[in-house]
Length: 329
Image (cartoon, rainbow, N blue to C red; front, top):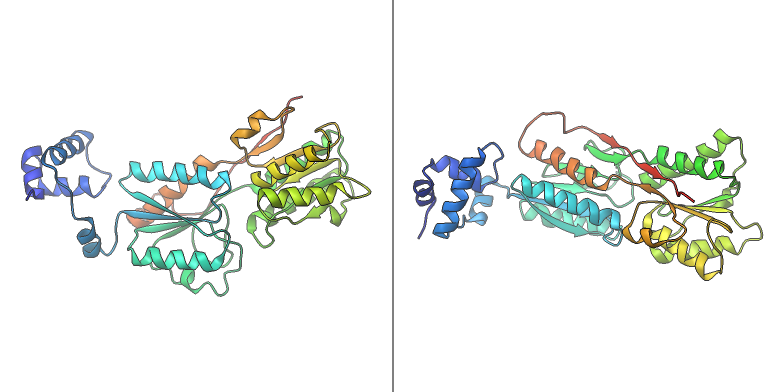
């Protein structure tokens, strides 16, 4: 049976170096890493990860718990996080909660039993009160996309309030005066931030805002569709829509098309989140391009800094920049 000593002898390095390479330790020269990997492959050596995890009381797995896999925002965050984790010798395990706190708690318990090194959590909406598992987390943890007020974990988020303000202000500058917001899930920190930015744009422009023009829809394509249908049936129909996530934006587009209306002539459409199929829409939509790749990468960097006990400025809160992509018509 091939042992780690055999690998070290074939590679011409120490046993400690082999151990560092195979455990994903980052501070090993590229030359030594390549020698070890070639030797391990030639000898057919595979370390016993289960035994190693039990010995260290953690594995080289990172959990990514996201709130809805349907939203391409989270698939893009997951892809970037997987790439960043792999580059540092860690494996990523993705769990989907469908915006349910109970499922979130179940997955966190499961990941704890699997001795994950740490967890990146895009939390389901809900207060910190009652989330006992998070208050006494057994592993390093980083929040992403949303915060949970009152819990002391670093959060990688985006400037959603400012992006909502800029997008609504742009619609106002195009002559829109009755802009409706499809707001999504109440209680989510992202929803509240975007709502504040939406309202602030009206205040800055000196325009009145009808509270009835803020409609909470389920954060799904169907939710965006139904909310838009309801808005279009009003006597005073909106002249523009701002959807608070990309799946609701797609639902809004479908509803506008089914009503026989055109954008931007009859009603303009804007939304949070760039998605690939948006390239097919003509005329183009105004979209807020969210920093999904940077969010996933930074979350992994912050988590690994905690896991490996390095205080290199990556462990605090970070607010990333959204980018308004205004439609050119």
